[in-house]
Length: 483
Ligand code: SF4
Image (cartoon, rainbow, N blue to C red; front, side):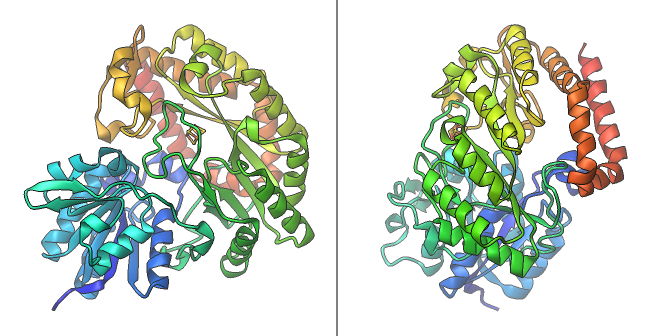
């Protein structure tokens, strides 16, 4: 039977063995749908092509389903999304597809391959194309077999005889209001199977939503390979309709805007809030902001429109390190805005990193002091990871040792250890940071208030208590082993 050149199978790889998935705390605590793939699928369908999606993160034992879809639907293409952590698994899935359906063309996309570009094809003979940047138009052009050949498809790495070529960056991104809403119906189990982090939502079903692409800043640790430094966004009108669709079609009651800079365009957020206040949808929302792009009036409007929690990238409480790694490093402004958010009645979440180049024990203590002096209700402390597309990746070895093992590049391992540290000491301090947070009375009062503000979170927490305790013990054990 010949393959269907109008059909693609899109796969979101798990990144590790399915047997590990059941006890994987990151999956239990936070499971987000592959919205980029759902957007590509919706776009292709709107253009008369066909797409199926297999999300192996939500459904770890999916190899059988992938084989079944390859056999039954005979797609001419397989597209796999790649983070650094998931890359090896993506290549494995491509091999599996080629063994099951010889002749199928493979396309990889996502941040990791957008950063590594030509190297991906040179080192992986089973990969036929890499899409650099956003995937909707490039995937359509590949599937239709552009008259001009691959060289005429912007943002494509392809094979040219024995060589590998790059057609160059796509100059203009799409008008996001022209995109159909993501194909949520292609995500098995949506919305119930997907979960926001515990204590990060008041009620369910909850959903993630992306309403803009890109960020004009350039922090040293941030991989901008997909959207580069552009910033495009959905209009307030489009976004209101998207939320209405999520509510009426999918029963969604809380949305997490997964945008890098939700309030970068103040006007559209203000207009959206006006709409949500005038014609409420019964939806609350979270978003991530930068201190420079919020003010008291906007916060009041957002609260009235249903804003429940805001995340801010603090990264570190050490002014010197912060100014080395990002623009407008003003910790006083950040502190003032965090207080403004809290005073507006919105929950605050701080996003921090440990182990940046230049980090010292004193800078870690400074970060603890800074964060604990602020009304931060929740925080997420990641282990700094120099991803291939981040500006700092180029020079990272000047500042310490770097074990570039992709299977550990999930922000849960110190793959980079700054000079004057050992990995063991960093892990110890990491544990101390969290322990100090949970020892504070204010934090416990806040969690107790979640009994009525987010009862389902407590339920999830208690149901998974054994896994959390096992994880905490394992982390403590490895901390002690390192001493
Ligand atoms: S870390 Fe945030 S502000 Fe900095 S470049 Fe990345 S998305 Fe933009």
